[in-house]
Image (cartoon, rainbow, N blue to C red; front, side):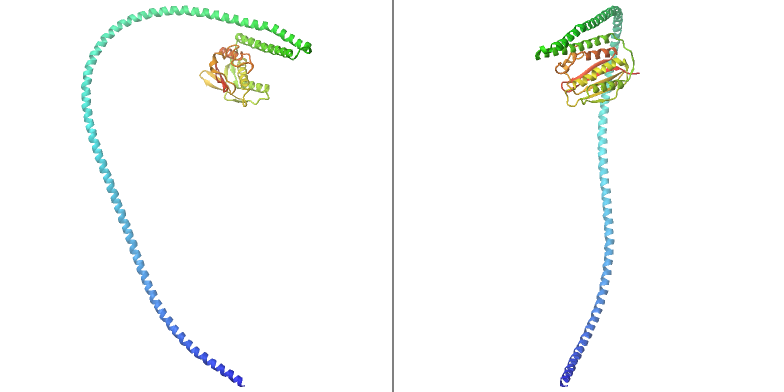
Length: 407
């Protein structure tokens, strides 16, 4: 009971302390509430003052914007006046320059007028002299007319003499032409006869050599057999030479049959045949535009067999042989060309190129008889065309053939 009374007294005392603290807290709260009211009143006053200042700033900003626009307008007006003033100055300078030019031109015109007046006076003096000269020339012309009449008479006499000489010359030309044709005919007949007569002994040489090799081969040493082989090889070359010579002679006697010829068809078949004969060679053949011509089909085929086979042969030692064949119009003719990148030739020896038995390469380099180009020239001549060539050593050659164009 005593403990409970103490506890109750302690609690009563604590409650008294709490009550005193609560009274103090109430006073403090009342004080803070008054302070907050004061601060709220001050804040309201500050907010009103801030709103007023913001309003004043907006007024000042609007006034400043209006002032800036006015200043920009005034600057623009000043620049416009400055530009107008500059243009006016330039125009004034230009007008002054034009005035100076006009003044200078006027001075020059005055000088020119004075010069022209002086020239007119000179021309008048020259005209007077020219009239005198003309009178002198007229007198000279009359003299020349008399001399010209004499010269015309002498010229007529000279013409008569020239006509008489031409008649005599034509008769001599006809006579010489007949003699030349007879000599050519006789030479061709002789070449044909000689070539034909050479065949029999050549066949005999070849036959007997073959007999020796077949019947006495075991009695011959290696050198003897090599000699026999060389004899057979040379007899074959001589046979080929005789064949070419007979062909050359035959072309001279042969008449031509003119017709329109499809050259692409001929050249295509020639190239195909040559490629078939040498299937192991990779030769690049390019055919450009090939015009039709008027001529003998068989003869023209022989021309291009010889030309294209030469291009194949003389490009045989090139790693990548290239041959180009084409044509182009040349007045009343069509010109064909066969170009290769082979051995070529030296233009210093061009005059020997189309001669019979004339060769610019040895048999050790390239085999041949030296008749192929001569045959080409004879065939082309019979077609009233011409053949020529261009070349450089080791840089290839290009052969040209001009033939009558197709109708």
